[in-house]
Amino acid sequence: MSRETATGLASRRILHHDEQVMGTVVTFDLYDSDAGPNDLQVFLDEAIDVLHDADDVFSTYKTDSPISRLRRGEITLGECPSKVPEVLELCREARTISDGWFDPWSLPGGVDPTGYVKGWAAQRSLEVLRRSGIRGALVNAAGDTASFGCPQPGAAFRIGIVDPAATHRLACIVNSPGAVATSGVYERGGHLIDPHTGRPASRAASATVTGADLGLADALATALAVAGAQALPLIEALDDYEALIIGYDGTAAMTSGFPVARDPSPGPRSSNSPPPD
Picture 1 (cartoon, helix red, strand yellow):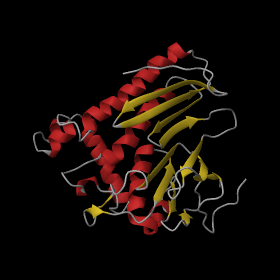
Picture 2 (spheres, rainbow, N blue to C red):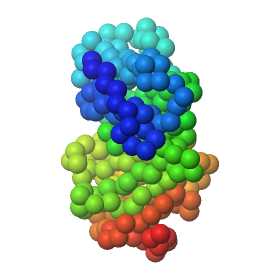
Picture 3 (cartoon, rainbow, N blue to C red):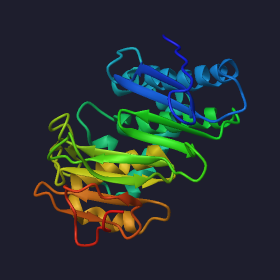
Picture 4 (tube, rainbow, N blue to C red):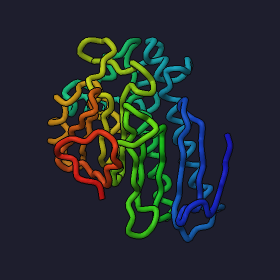
């Protein structure tokens, strides 16, 4: 796999890397450290290895992965690597929190935790980077982001939320509290499954969840995209997690603390959206 280092690409960014893994591209951006790029490369390599290890264990497209073998009944859960029961327990918690709207056990072919794994793996890779002593980092896993610190003093990481009706523009920009995940069918088509019917369904054009952990935020964004606005109270009830839904008619609804930084009109806006800066 490639290892690419760049410096001076932004006011505070000292290293950028793109990695092809899990069927997508995951990007790493590291900011403002006293360590040199060569010192940081050790941590970046470990963070990248976290992603590839997760792919090797959980990919349902790899016939010899533990999760594929578990789904076929060739091995038991006890014979899987320890991270498999760990992730499945997290999936059970997400299923409970989402009132069953996120349910990896309801998918065709057997249990499929990949809707949790991408965010979970990105979050774990971020924790590796945190140990390096850098002052800020952002891991972008196909548009879902995990971050800590800031790109420059006094400035939070700001994440653009795409307008699902016009993907060349943004619906809004949010101040990231650490994790931002968006789910919808505007790019990949009808891949979301309603756990209650077993059929493709989504009642929102897009759903975004922000919070402390990207694994849970990713799972809840999937649940919200399937369930629609009826599931917003489930997110409202959680500490440290907020949500935004954009409907197929362009209207938007959000929880009371959703961290909007700016509304780049034109774009969907609900009655409780703040005005532009």
